[in-house]
Structure formats: C-alpha cells, structure tokens
Image 1 (cartoon, helix red, strand yellow):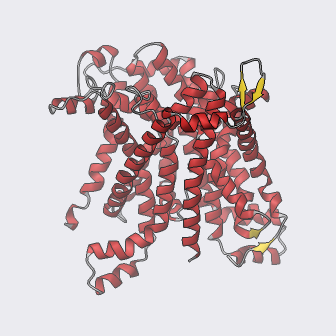
Image 2 (tube, chains in turn red, blue; image 1 turned 30 degrees about the horizontal axis):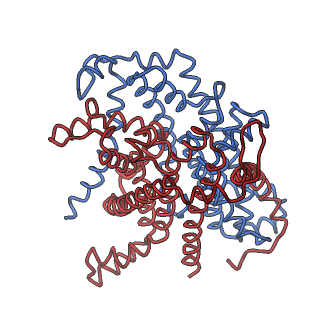
Image 3 (cartoon, chains in turn brown, red; image 1 turned 180 degrees about the vertical axis):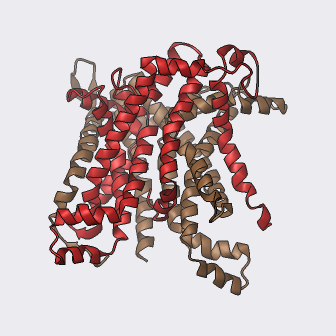
Amino acid sequence: MASKTENQKAWLFVLPVVLLVAFNALIPLMTVVNYSVQETFGDNVFFWEGVKWYEQVLNSERFHDSLLRQLAFTGTILIIEIPLGIAIALTMPRKGPWVPVCLVLMALPLLIPWNVVGAMWNIFALPDIGLLGRTINALGIEYNFTQQPVAAWMTTVLMDVWHWTSLVVLLAYAGLCAIPDAYYQAAKIDGAGSWAVFRYIQLPKMKRVLTIAILLRFMDSFMIYTEPFVLTGGGPGNTTTFLSIDLVKVALGQFDLGPAAAMSLIYFLIVLLVCWVFYTLMMRNEEV
Amino acid sequence: MRRFTWLAPTLYIIFLLLPIYWLLNMSFKTTNEILGTFTLWPQEFTLDNYRKIFTDPTWYNGYFNSIIYVVMNTAISVTAALPAAYAFSRYRFLGDKHLFFWLLTNRMAPPAVFALPFFQLYSAFGLFDTHIAVALAHCLFNIPLAVWILEGFMSSVPRELDETAYVDGYPFWRFFIKIFLPTISAGIGVAAFFCFMFSWVELLLAKTLTSVAAKPIAATMTRTASTSGYELGLLAAAGCLTIIPGAFVIYFVRNYIAKGFALGRV
C-alpha cells in the first residue's frame, strides 16, 4: 500500500470510533483489572491482594477442567465445520436460480438469536417429544442429553455445526466464486483431475477466506455461552460447562469478584494471544 | 459423479431446516398435544400461541425493544465506522496499524468478561434499562466489524476517484457524501447487515443491561421459560417470530452477501 498518504489529521476521522469503543472497552476492562487485584467484603471496601486471585485461578482444577473442555469443544467443531463447509461450498451451484435460494436458506441459522438456537435444539433433541431424540431412541440407541454426558456433548457439537457451518460455507463459496474461469480452463488443458484442481487451484485461492473462517470460528466458539446454557445449562454435572458459562457462574452466581475478574483476564489473554498469532500470519500472507 | 453434486447442498439444507420445522410444528400445537403425544405435524391446529404473543404487551414489546436497539446500533456503528474506515484505507497516521488491531481485539472479547462491568458502567451513567445502553454496548463488537468490512470495500475503490474530485474543486465532505458513499453502497449494505445480525442474535449483554423497559424479546423468552414452567408452544411461537426479521433482512441483501464475503471480510 505505497499509495497511502501520510496525514495525521486522519485521527479526527477515527476519533468517533475510538471514543465509542474506548468507552465500552477501556472503562470495563479497567474495572476488571481493578477487581482482579483486590479483595472485598462488601460495602465497597477493597483491599489490595496483588496476584493472589491469579495464582488461585491458575492453580484451580475447576479452571483447568473448563479450559480443557473448551479446547476440546473448539477443536472438535473446527475439525468438523471447516472440511464440511468447504465440501458443501464446492458442490454448490455457481450460477442459476438456485444460488440465491441456497444462500438465503443457508444464512438462516446465522440470524436466529442464540438463545432461540438453544431452545430450538432443546425441543428438537428432547428424548420424548423431540424429533431427533425420538428418532435416535427409536433406532434402539438410548439417548437422553439431559442425563448422559456423552449425549449432551454430542448434541452441543451438533448444534454448533448446525448453527455455524453456514458461515464457513458462505466464506468458502465467496472464495471459490472469485477464481477466474481461465484457471479452470488452463487446468482442463493440462488434464488435471478434480483433486488436482482442488489441491492446486481452489485451496490456495481460498486460503485467505479460510484463515478468516478459522479465526472467526475459533473466537466465537471460544466465547460460546448462550446456546449451551439454554440447551444443557452446562450439565449434566459440568460436562458442557465451557469457559464463559463457568465465568458467569463465578461472577454473577457466587459474586466472587476477585477470582472472576482474574479468570476474565486470563481468558481474554488466551483469546488475544491466539488471534494475534493468526492476525500476524494472515497479514504476512497478504503482503507476499 | 457430476450429476449428483446437488445432493450435498440439498441434504445440508434439509439438516438446517429440520430443527426449524420442529419449532414451527410445536408453535401450532396445544400444550396437551405437545406433552401428550408425538406427532409429526399438528393434529389440533391452533393459533393460540401466536394470539397470546400479539395481545400481551410484555411479549410484543419485547420485539419492539429488540428492533429499536438493533436499528440504533446499526445506525451508530455504520455512521461512526464510515470516516474511520476511510482514514484506514487512505491515510497513514501515527499508530494506525496498532489502532486497527486494537479495534479488532474488541471483536474477540468474550461478552461474559464484560457483563458485570457493563452493568456497573451503564448504571453509573443512569442508562440502565434503556435502548441506547444496549445499542452502545453492542458497538463494542459491531464497530470493529463495520470498520473492517468498510475498509475492505473502500480499499477496492481506486484513489484516482478521490483525486479527480479534489481537482474538480469538490470540498471533501461533499465529495465523501455525494460521490464516495454511493460508490461503496454495497459495502455499506453488507456492513449494516452484519451489524444487524450480531446485534440481533446477541443476548448476554442485552439481558444484563435491561430489566423491564427495554427488555429484548429473547430475554422475555428465557424468563418465561424459567418462571411459568413449561409452555413449550408459546416458547416455540416466540422463537419462530424471532426468525422472521432475520430472514427478511437476508432476503434483501442476498445478492450482496456473497460479494461481501468475497472480500474476505466479515
């Protein structure tokens, strides 16, 4: 981007955005930092505690368990959603009357409020009155997601696949549509098979949108709260208690401000670190 | 092989529609039928669930509240993001790259982290339980998103456009509003679509910042579910109604979605 001109007045252009976001980000963040180093016994009396809460959170088994569950969940949905999304994008029609129909229907789950997604899957998967639950039980497999940890886990993963694969599909599809026809003609002349076309033309061209898809799915699945909360309430036991659910339990349920704040910051830093690595990689790719 | 490629998208769409169908099915059933029998379509077709929602103010006000703050948020986010995206796409200035990344980090902040401090912050300003509070709070993740999308669209407009207008003696703001904005109208549409989408589906912050006067429909639903036992039909009807605004918006931007994604910006 050599054509950009140096102009410090551009700050005036970004000022409204900076003010709005700073109001929403910096003040709450400082509040959290404040809580994370202090102890309170109510009445707004606070005592300096240093890094006590951080040590407590980092050494607590509960936090380790939530983090592991979270990592397992995010890993699972990425492994399912990314290849599935690519496969569906590859088989979607490129032109014709079916394109808008596909796009609209596929985008539908993305615009359903998250708690409705949870409630919908709850109703859909209930073993006695839900279509899914009833069908699985009719097949002779015992299934009850409110009692069986494995079933709860699988239902949560399936719900997320249902909810978000479309995002990957739309991104990959857009990447595919941006490939000029000449590439395919050249491949045809060279006698390339469909695997070769995918491996050497489509995949490299989709690299950028796929990076974004992985990044977005990572971020959003890492902060997932509403859907599993409505679906399973984090249960049975703690099997679907992911980081956000655990955090809200500590902060608003038990009102342990110190540990909750320390946990928030550790949580945020993990997301930030992963995204920073991704962002740097993405920007490096862009410059090449 | 080629002939069966339509199979995968079709199966996928059926998979997407099944839970939605089930919700719709439930919304037309009576509570007795839901709990008593298992039927693939309503045997005693009833509109009572919908009638209840359209006549009870605590229900239908929820829709108005949601739509009010979503529209406010979309307007604020896009308006504020337009000049900022222009600055990022056209100028180099002190700390521009860091600022851009900092903005994006807010898209990555888990709302659960901010729920409690947001409650205290907006209470301190006397904004608790107002539409504007939710609209402003959603700016946290929507402004970075809007800036990101718009910057992509603006960067694809050649700089010559700006220079020609300048040579022709257009004052900057007139050029920006009369010439530049119409050229990126697709981008504005896409940005508005995503702001609408993320503000519409978010619940944690919206629920934390409201109690009665600005309570979103989604929160009305969860509270009903927990207080008055199991009124599944009512819950299903309310859920079906929340799908409509989204479907409506997608229909309008259907030709732009793919284009917006094509720039790789979401």
